[in-house]
Amino acid sequence: MKVRQVSIFLENRSGRLAGVLSEVAKAGVNIRALSLADTSDFGILRLIVDNVDAGVKALKDSGHTVSLTEVLAVEISDRPGGLAETLEALSAADLNVEYMYAFVCRVTEKAVVVFRFEDVDAALAALKAADISVLPANTVYAI
Image (cartoon, rainbow, N blue to C red; front, side):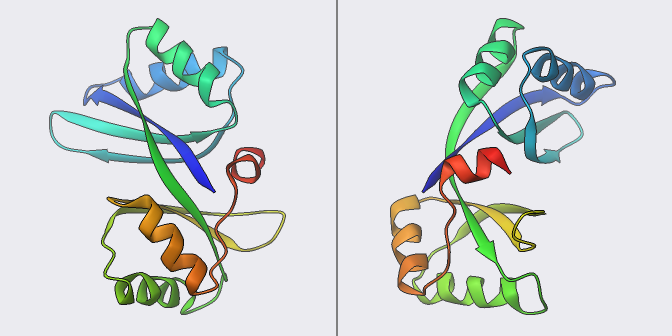
């Protein structure tokens, strides 16, 4: 149920993002979802890719600073209030969302939100208790 997310530290200057994404592409790795957070000096690029090991190897081999983080990909009804209901269940379990980003799944026509929690196992238990669908990693990588 946990998904491995690739995080890359980037200097905030022209061409750095293109360079990282070119390395991923050269390795034949397909990006399923991404998020970019930045400051004036640096950024963190977070990727969900279809082949984590190949993506990490390509990025490290090209000199990038890379880390792996466990996240959850939660299937949410793509309608008004769908995300709010999920967040209410997490709040009721006293879980804090560190960050999140979303994409829409073409196959199920549902939204998928990637969440990062300090305690992934507690979040997984809370989501299951609230009968909220958490996608397995192989499904997310294949979307």
